Amino acid sequence: MRKVMEERRKSPVKKGDFMEQVIKDMGVEPLYLTEDQVIYFTAGVWVATFVTNSIILSLIFKFLSDHPSVLEELRVEHEDILKSRDGSGSNLTWDEYRSSMKLTNYVINEALRFSALFPGLLRKALSDIPVNGYTIPAGCCMLIVTPVLHMNPEIYKDPFTFNPWRWKELDALTVSKYFKPFGGGARQCPGADISRAFLAVFIHVLVTKFRWTKVKGGTLVRNPLLGFRDGVHVKIWEKPQTNKTN
Image (tube, rainbow, N blue to C red; front, side, top):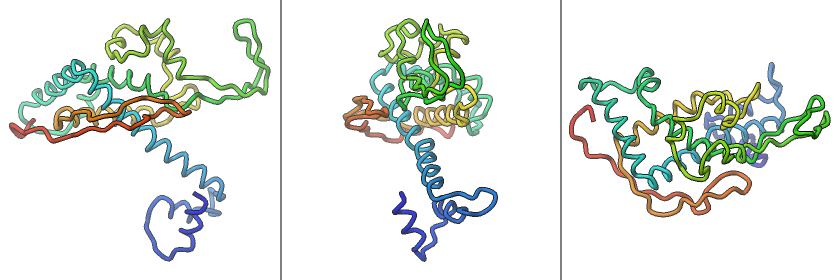
């Protein structure tokens, strides 16, 4: 990335993109960004906006392909949304997202449970912390392993099984303690709500306008980020349209 920055600085060609803007901002009030800060920030934005969403969407393709009964129920849920518009042909609304996507949110939660992308959350102990008879001394760096938290068999029965209906039974207190796809506390991901809305809209468009079949791939690995050993290859085509609403 440092090499790319140097090449862009020397190039007379203007692209008007993100990299060009942050290079302009280097050393300028009020940010006074250094080269290292720009590199870290650019890498962080790439991870937060591309890597996370692409892996979660790949997971959704995989799980829905492997569980046709879930996919069929999702289609019914979203076709009902279309039918409730009385042929108006309007776009998806906030009310529809909030009140008519129960199974969709179960599917998103289950995909997020599997997709704890990073191996854990790093935190520094500001004071001595007693844990089950042990003490974590102040100043120690802690790695909170969220993927293990999401696979706790005492909370999630058959944790390695994709089961969106499990979310019917989980109460709010349990979820708040054992479900951390966006981290937690003061440093929880600020994009949590918009990410959920994005996934819901994606699913709505996917199941109402398209059909697909998985061709190959889908083997999950962690090394150390979550990913796919051989990708997820799908063949996708537009659903034949019967009327303007559908």
